Amino acid sequence: MPAITDQLSIKTPLQPIYLLQGTQDYLIKYVRKKIVELAVLPEDRDLNLSVYDLNETPIELAVEDAMTLPFLGDKKVIVLLNPSFLTGEAKKQKVEHHLDEFLTYISEPSPDTILVIEAPYEKLDKRKKIVKSLESGSQTFSLNQLSEESLFQLLKDEGQSLNAIYTKGAHDRLLALVGFNVAQLVNEIHKLALYVGDQREIKEDDVEVLATRSLESNVFDLVNHVLKRRADLAIQLLQDLFKQKQEPIRLLALITRQVRIMLQTLLYQKQGYTQKEIASRLKLHPYAVKIAAELGRTFQPDQLKQTLIWCSDTDYGMKTGREEKEVALQLLIHRIASL
Image 1 (spheres, one colour):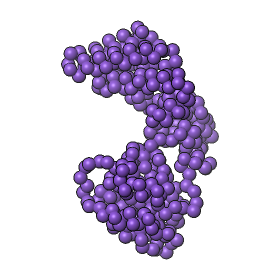
Image 2 (cartoon, helix red, strand yellow):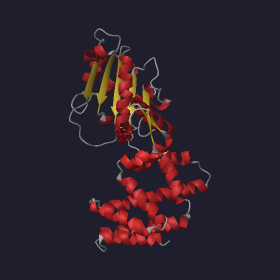
Image 3 (cartoon, one colour):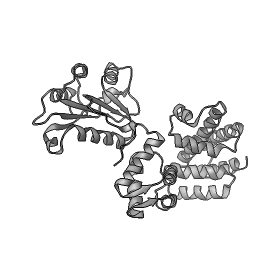
Image 4 (cartoon, helix red, strand yellow):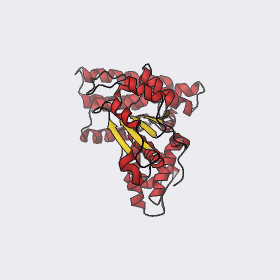
């Protein structure tokens, strides 16, 4: 299998501590698997691979294990799950952790142990001493999202492992329909590879036929219809979403978000920012900015601002009971389409 891009690569020699932080659970498990494969032979993993859930186990027990020698092997791997003390969450922990012992270990880690800390959180509390110590004393992987090229390469590799050829056209359409959750995208690749058969290309038309559309994708299509003055198609799609028991207030929130992204993208472009720079500022995947830019190209900022005002007014009417939700949303769509 071709090597994945540097964003997910594990360099040797291995580091004593790895911090895997982010909301993409698939990517965390992917990097952990690569570390374990490099550190411990398959036949040694029963004895030299340990996993500690810090919701159930004090950190000092894991530290004690990390300081012991591996059994009949060169290295051992200790995996720590749910280190909520790295965040700003105020929820009460089930167990008490003595972090001083952990801090001491971070400063002087065992050369025989690879410590992998899985932190499935969007961000850590950088004010905490333990977070500062970890970030300076470990190799950190930020796994909230991948760059566009890294994501394409990962999915292309996944397709190749299943004897299918994943094309760029299929990739763009799959992102538009499914979104950017890596685990969901990998599941779609498995379906598509089975559908096309061995050594065949996965093409855009295959994605269109087989991919499971996300709610966000349906809302994007709805906004697309509205802004292109196709109110009849937008209303038809909206009725389908109502039949699926989608809550009108949630649909309105997604519509508002899409319009806001379009406006922000347009304003940043007028200031000379690239799509990559805009994506970084808005904390979005670059492809989301790309399609927002394409969709908003025929509109002026004032029109999008007016649309946001109407969205806000409709939201207020729904939440105060002044307007019937489904009717209010349909009226909003006709209003925007008449801009």
